[in-house]
Image: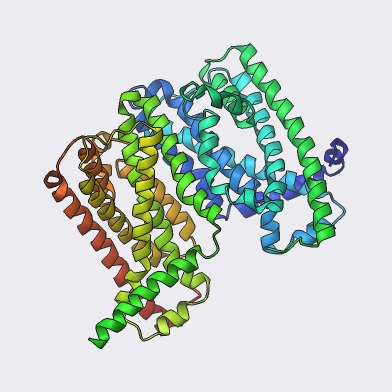
Length: 265
Length: 266
């Protein structure tokens, strides 16, 4: 997997994205993570923050949307290779000339794009059902933040998928991976509430920088310098994640071919 | 006498084997992740969100609410899978073909989850005391134990009903997850029920957990057993009603599936 592959296989990536989008729209588990869970978290947060909800509504909309993004990341993107194994299509995908990494990139692009729905639905909920007046404070900075966050999530997902398929012990913790990141990334409350020793862990998480950029630009609480720094961190982590993912894909394919355990559950 | 012994054996064997079958695929680390670390993380998240929203002085409101709500993990997911798993593993045909007492067979599916769920709530309270400064010094502990047991039992009643739904819908995961999250709102675990609109309060009043959580909060604030007994009686009654609804649905599914030949094609 290298940069040239993205230009060479862009049609494949888009086709995989389209097919994954169609498939995921019929998956009730994915729809729960994208639509129902963020809505229910938003409802809960809006009631919990009822005294300050008018000011915090945009923060809650973005935060609950980010929870949907992360849930999709853990379960859909994390399982993007494992799912092929369950369906018996992994051998075929490994056998085609297109690098597996490009196919998984297309799948993750679809998952992350679809999970943007969670933010839109949370927005509609807060605006229509709760009647809050919502506006993005810095739209010119918010939309690049959104795009860079999506890229950050996709690249992070690229490292998770081979890890989940190679190391079952990691996948066993899948169900417990949601809340720690909700907490450490500061999706719905500032990380200043957490003990000091957890702060460096937050800094190592791309979702944290996505939350900094998106909360900061949607509520107007971040300076341009702070937003630019968050963008820089998102770009840096995206490059690092792609490099790590490239190595992990090589190891995974080597192990699969040498040990011949590609489809062994 | 022979019938009673036979029914008890069916109840006990159904209890043990369904539980072993459900968790047979789990390694200890998976159990640890799902039943111990996962609930702790959920408690942390909602307690931090709650204290961010309402102040640190209210932390115990969220710790107690989320600790008791852990009962739904076994009550909803565990019990549902014990019943729905029969369909997925292809054993429903044999289950419905067996000349066993249906009531024993049905309620036996929930028994271990009541114990497991109650243990999960106790662990959650232990996390609360150890990590979140929950103070139990004023608490009548036997009454809190009874509250945990009754609440888990009533939640398993709802789980039995949900389990039967898993026999008539393919989207049981979606339904279970939704119900679990709805309980987080409607049971009062994270939102004071008095701030909810009246239609939401009406729903809260007919759900398990609501009175169990209220009872646990009252006991931890220093209330005596006698003060919470009425709450627990209603909580138990609600659980029994859901359990019986589940049982009758189970019977209906059996009759309907046999009549239409749709036992595994629903």
